[in-house]
Length: 112
Length: 113
Image (cartoon, rainbow over all chains, first blue to last red; front, side, top):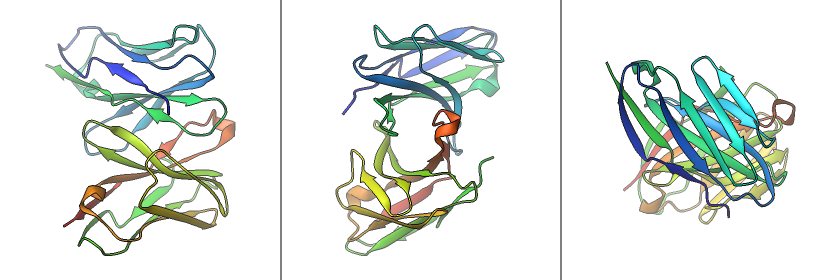
């Protein structure tokens, strides 16, 4: 069983601040890394899927990078807004197994 | 939004009672998953299916069974519910052509007394 770890566990920032979170995963037999956004009382929603070392993905003010050799991914939010408040989950797939192992998430709260 | 529904959305039951949760999709996706979500553990995979009648265990499968007789339905059964199975259960679907992005249902809150 993979051990996927996320840090920090929680983060409180002011509106307009930029922030970033880390996801670390075992680099051996890596296949894909997923990021999800999970708002309270809703279901997780997919943000990005990354497979190649050096991959960078962007959606609006949110971007992510991937380093498969050292086993980490960063998620960046530029100019955080209150509507960015959510838990951000990463999940790693080992080999082509169709199964994701999720980290416990980083809970972001953005204050106006 | 992906067409995924879960039923029931909320359930209270007693220890020792059998419980079945249903996940229904209208997307014709091949893969379906059951997760449980508990504080401090994030999402943990219980069972998954890669086709009709094709299922496999996840990391927390003890005490659970699944069945998939049709593409659109994936059932999760707790044969004899225990208090440790009190949780929020999420169903998800995916398809290989979409880089295996998983789309999640609304969740089912289960309380075992």
